[in-house]
View 1: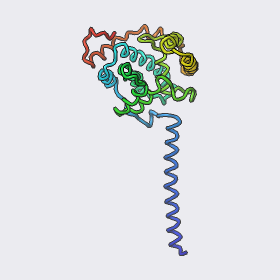
View 2: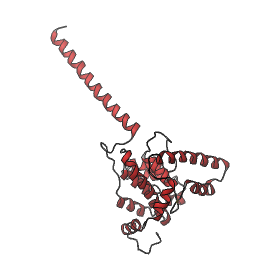
View 3: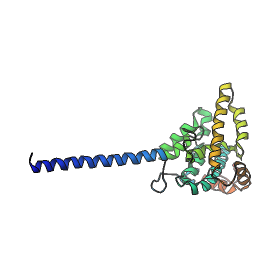
View 4: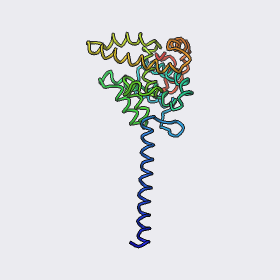
Length: 248
């Protein structure tokens, strides 16, 4: 083999090696995203604004009490996030806010259709171009994973916040559990499944509050005492509702 042929062969092998190296780096970066979630510093997702959330809630004709419930869940989730985001910068605060507001986006419709509102709510948002927000909505009843890491993820904050709101009132987990058991525990296996889920939620609560300067009980006192009429007035304005609407 001549020196020129050897050089061509060497160049070809070097090109193949470079392509493989680039592919490996790409796959490693995708694996990191899969394992650790989104990084606000380097990745952005399409997230609806608060006004866009309100518009979708109006479009889906959400019942008044579900609108207020969703706003309360959003208040709990964003309050927790405001404290957590300093320690855990991976959290996407805007995505948490939107998913909290929209977690029951198809629940009103589900009363007539019998659909799983967590799944159809997720699909609704995916169809609108918000698949990452939809994925959080899908997990607001049951998480894909519990205690996957010490650091709480967006889905866990949404899931926990929903467990802290009974209708329009921010309550502790025990009171919310009593309501769930009364409404949904029709059979022994249902009761067993609910207790198991609540045990996991208790562990989640401990993980979330391990880094916070206040207790779970403080949220009841702080947020229930705050005026929520500002958000309601904005919602009514976006939806062109009369100020005397039953949404209170």
